[in-house]
Image (cartoon, rainbow, N blue to C red; front, side, top):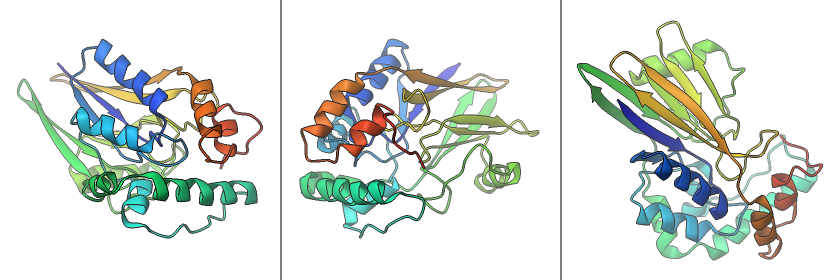
Length: 248
């Protein structure tokens, strides 16, 4: 049996990341992977990057990582309210100003996706890691998406599992060919009602892969206080505490 922990979308939320990493360590899971979006919306972007680097955790390039690494302009999204649009511009500008050049270089060199192969007994399992999709790191695929979309991803990647993040909403779906599409949710900026830090454990044995979504409380008040003291808009503190903020 092999266990793999996969997490995503930390978004500068160091207190949440530390809780998730501690839980993974407590479970004795040594294989850890991050699907990207280390930065934006909470003030510890550099600290999160340094933590990932110091632990040698393989990490993908999320869309926010790419924007900060290459100074890509922010484009308003039609799904966002005027309040969120303004907050988003300020928060991303904060990251562009404060993320160090060394850490921007680290983000610029992250892989776009990774494919893992594990051998358990006589069985080889293929696990495809993406931030949001095979061709884009900014595609929103929700649980309600047509099964064919995920089945095509499994077929195109030759994988038994496609693991993704990006939407900040966790789910797991199994298909007739026993393939899995799994979203591990978000460590640091959950859009789920409970706002808990989320990650996934994959348990591999010779017969099957079993995904388990883990959701953990973390000191949200500490993160909210850090946001309010940082120059990042209070919008994101209210978001984490689920205080009458519209989620889109």
